[in-house]
Image 1 (spheres, helix red, strand yellow):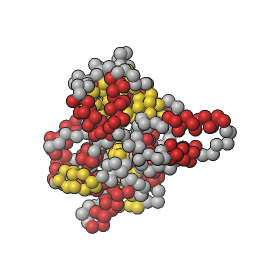
Image 2: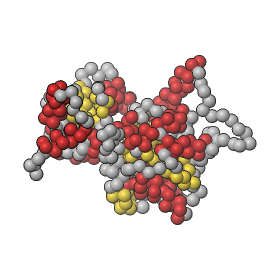
Image 3: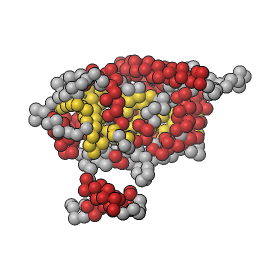
Image 4: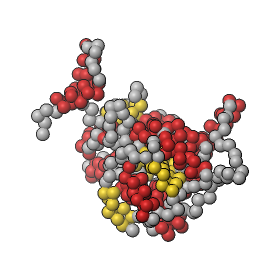
Length: 418
């Protein structure tokens, strides 16, 4: 059914169609509207046989999701930013126990300084936690990925994060095609848990593992992730057969068949990049897109094949590894060993919700076509501001908080601009 609704409501409706039995809720922007809408559905009785549990923290939300899952329930929660960090201990526990929990991460910057706007710092900070991570390009894909996520999670017995850009998607009103309950039931079978606690037959879970077996346990986690690559791809095809729409999977290629420069990105920025590529193609410039849909496990073979004949790869990174560079750039470098003639350039962009303008991307992609793009660059960086600050720090020992100094400097720098 076509609906013009907020992205968060679309996701809530998609989750409800999957018949969750436990929904754990703690508010943190920009995911709050998702769990609020699910709570309203439970209260109205439109979402039945579901326990909606208000908890006192994000750590509690994941802990309750773990409890609900090991008790045999289909469990869901959502979080963002510092909330994801606060639940990190339990996030690792969920994957270590092999629990098929689904969680929305409404991606948002991590402080300090405090910033509530979108980048991928939070979701990518947990890239090694053992969860499958799927990234949505738009709200329609966010709806579809949540439905696919429950099936993937339950087939491989691993938790799944569906990462959607905070505010940019969660609070945007778009037209979405919400599947019917009959379609989702045909796609997603009733939950049949691999493990379920029974008070009549008590067992321990999460037991301590010593040095004699810990390596083997971690290897199996790695092996399960590699196995899930095929499942993610297959579930996407099954979704298309039943729902009639191609979405998800491992990667998405756009105008890539003869590309000399391939742009690589995650999330909602892909839409802007596609527009820029269309404009550049009209001028005869051979630029294409490799969109990463499944970030963990990382689709190394598919990435290698997509970049095998490309001269330059431009990675648009919305998270920074301080002291080294882009997060996704490292994954691309690792995945393309053997492509000695491939030039890989990382571009840090959109941190803390800074807009990624088409004109800025045009400049970057043109520089890449001329082979003039540096190995690491920061999109639309105010170089005078940061250079003045660095010089000031060398001259003055007591400089005060950097964030406040930069905010003042940027404001002064833009005085008089229209």
